[in-house]
Image 1 (tube, rainbow, N blue to C red):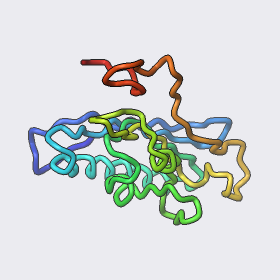
Image 2: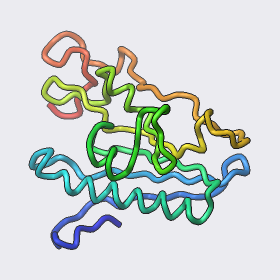
Image 3: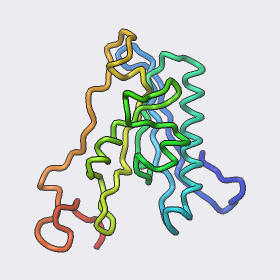
Image 4: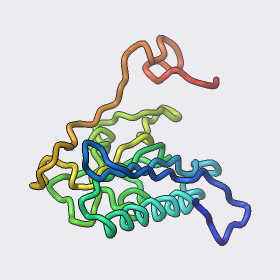
Length: 176
């Protein structure tokens, strides 16, 4: 449960932790839908930072229990890969060559740097929907395992996008 002690009226979706074995290896998924940017990105940032701290505490707890556990954090983070909630608090880095032992790998960062995203807001692409991995899922990891990260991509076929008009090239809108 995500709470903000200083804001008794705050309510947010819980984060879901699913742990078990996948192909006989310990595996955990942390699924979240972090607080929105309602009221403004900077004004609501502290809420996503709190969500990042909660996710990070779950990752750290899982790793202290069993360091071989493979972990994927996933969901709608309502922040881009470059936002402080992900880089400084969740400690997710998009550069494999500079990945520290304590950091998670965010393969969506390079996709975002290319100018791609999963939603368009006021003509700017954001990439809020992400998968973030613990390093033991990476091919550079020397641990023998059947489970390894292959690639990340955005599924974006033409039939899911607006045609000619004000929103051309953006995903079909739910509300207009």
